[in-house]
Length: 293
Image 1 (spheres, rainbow, N blue to C red):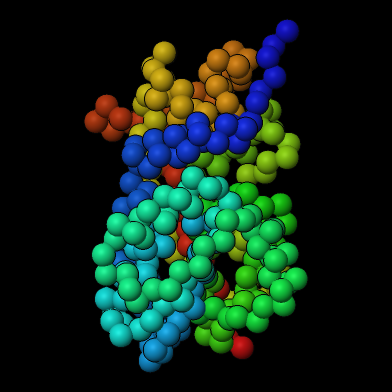
Image 2: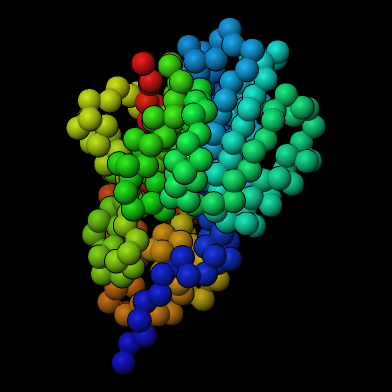
């Protein structure tokens, strides 16, 4: 009898290791840094220029690298501006890393921090119960809508927290990426039915249905997956776990599923071979929602 496939989300430590490996094998970090350095200041200019203080919130901010990069970049353009920053992160280890990063980073005395160790759903419930009325100028939701069930309600809630001219930034995998094609083709054969895969196209469809104005920015990126094709390679097995979201995928998946997944990952529709590497196409997009009222 075949062993049942177990969701990678049941092993938080292995999930985090898989995420770190993906970042090491890809140019995703560089693409996001390029977006923050080259595009964010202009995107945020109508929101923050002329203000002595802005309120920001990072939703599902993980260990905080992107948040700090954003705030530092905006500070360079507006050195006299004070920042009130709230963070929502449900994983204690990640929030601890975020706090450590803040302590180890000099020159952040212009930021006031509020750390919320809670899920998005818990944050929304707490916000409504306390009848909070605070508004925000910038809200970032980078790669976090995978972890909520009612994405439309989540987007609407955080949009409702925006000040006039505020910006809500949502980043997710693009729908035509090789990773998304893997899930679309085989995800229903091994994915936990409680976990659904979401791409930025679905967010744009939701915003279009509500008549919400937004701009979209493509972040082209790719990840080297060659180790996935080397039998017995531990990092390749970890990468496959993360891509499929199945714990110990190579050891537990039926042979035909493993063969199908590896064949698709190697297909030209998903990846290209270059200089001995197999580069999986996995671009993301950042959607920026403008609050005009």
